[in-house]
Image (cartoon, rainbow, N blue to C red):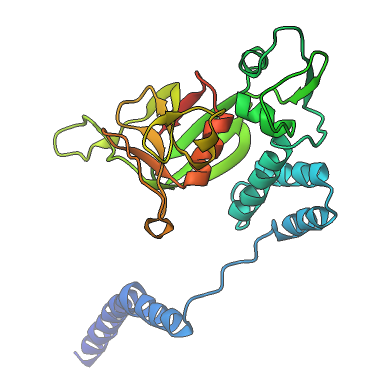
Length: 289
């Protein structure tokens, strides 16, 4: 009888001991580990393996060789899109891209147009698929007059604009590669796609093209690039998506007048709106998502 009791006791200890160990492993140990992890505080993120490559780019930037710096940064942006330095690299690359395209500085992609009889700036812009403002800035012109046999440098471009609601960023691409990005200050409410009953509506991806560019002078009237008040103008870029006109959205403390489209739109800083108005041409594609 005593032996039987001992056997039962051993079995009970084995069964309940195993259950207790399992409970410890399932509940107690994880809680202890979590508490110990919290006591250590936030862990430092692992080192970014792209930092040495970014530093190499910065060394090239310091040489003041603009074309070499652009090439180095373009390569970094293309190959390391997840880098912690990607926004800084894009900011610098965008500045270099506009610096090159808006100046008489030589560049491999630039071509030459020879002015012929009866040529005017608007006509040359159409033939070169650029804009009059870009031709003026890219050649350092102070006036509209052209001379026969005058050399005008221009950059063949294939611009497209991608606007991200999530990032609140307008990204300009040239030949499908990054050119420059512009922060968005104001964005229309997203339209939702119809989904299953009870499911959250997903924002619709919108696609259109540049329809028209409008410059509003300080007195409220429309002006063109040859007018004296053009330098003080606020800009609209209408696209084939109703209610999504890009417009100059100045800081309230700047004292500049806000000329907002009647149906709302996408507000960006005035200097960004002016720059995009110079770069974009009618028909350039625009995508919003």
